[in-house]
Length: 330
Image 1 (cartoon, rainbow, N blue to C red):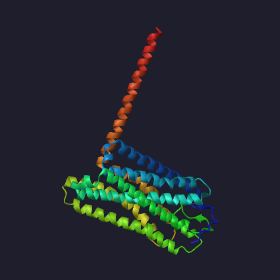
Image 2 (image 1 turned 45 degrees about the horizontal axis):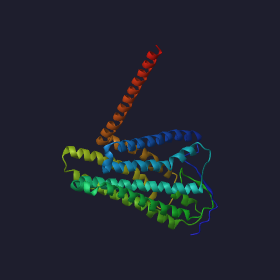
Image 3 (image 1 turned 180 degrees about the vertical axis):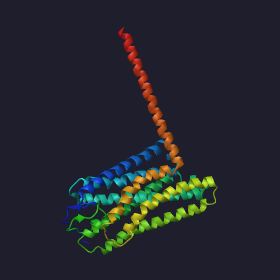
Image 4 (image 1 turned 90 degrees about the vertical axis):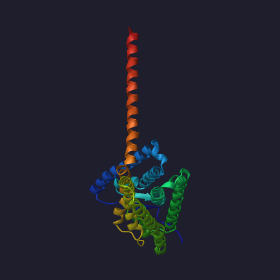
């Protein structure tokens, strides 16, 4: 396929052209992005400073928080700056870079969620073999495999788009560079490319979602025979995981599983997996997890006490120096 580009930049139409709505959206998404940064950094620091990082589930949660942070940072800063501009321009190179990084970190997140489901399956269905199956070396290997799989997915996705010719128009009815809006701007027949995109993104998402739902259904069936106390803890952990999976996958499947086409409603659905899901992930994993809440309490209470003691010691030393200076003056 010949790739001839007369387009050097694209115009992102964004969520709205109304100035008042744009200001309201800017304030709303600025708050959301601040919450995403604060919440995910809070989880990463807390897990790293506590002993929870030694457990596979929290090691993967740490990786998920990092992927959330990177994933939303490929989209949200450009969304925020675009809301303050009259015309939101993005160069062709930057657009393709955004497409690659968004699908790369999004792919990592999807695969990390799958690994977390496998971790819960082993912990609940094969508890006697858990430590040997989920060793630290194997956990690192799984994360490396997630990164490799996401890179392959993103590379194929980007290759399909960069091979297309763009000769005008250059107005994209979206707030970031995604596959379907770009396909609608290509000046060639994109039917075959659209089918490949559905296979690469839509089928990948659908198969992963079905595997996740099957694994959690099997877990729920297994824990039904547990005592009430153990069952409650397992249900709390698994329900938080399922909530995150549904919140992320449902809008993704709505956009990518259908035949290649771009609709104005896609922008609203895209907000769920680019901003809303990463914002709620820290809340879901902390508020529904007693072990996580206890670890957060210990880590941050210890830090506050440590800082308080240092302030008291510093104040006492300062007062002592002042007293010595006062005595020496006599």
